[in-house]
Image (cartoon, rainbow, N blue to C red; front, side, top):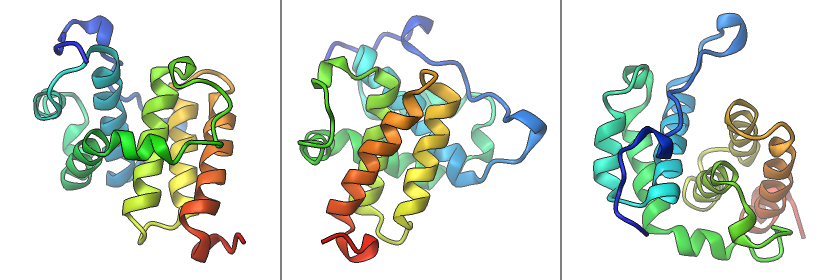
Length: 163
């Protein structure tokens, strides 16, 4: 990946408040910031620690579960190839055709399915869908939902009851 470019063009805007002013959980905020960081990493490359440090100064960071954010961003970057290997047969397009938003959300969701068994698979999928609704293309959440549903049936067989 190319060196990290801190130009605004490679960064997503900070998370915006949810309609109706409803509060977001600290874990949801952590996922939002992980999405921000992964987006930058996919678009411009760079060092995971430097990306995480830069995000700490963004508005709303204090409401995020910092430990979970750091686990998500480090874990997804360190295991990205293994996470993508789970996608075989679950995605219907070449990896290069995924938007950086979808790609980042799928990395986070796959990481949680594979490495955070205490988080129910339905929560993982719902959180990913919410991120896709907030940050992705108009119908991107449907794609994210479909892919993660297939992955949950494979990764969490004991939990989903899939044969």
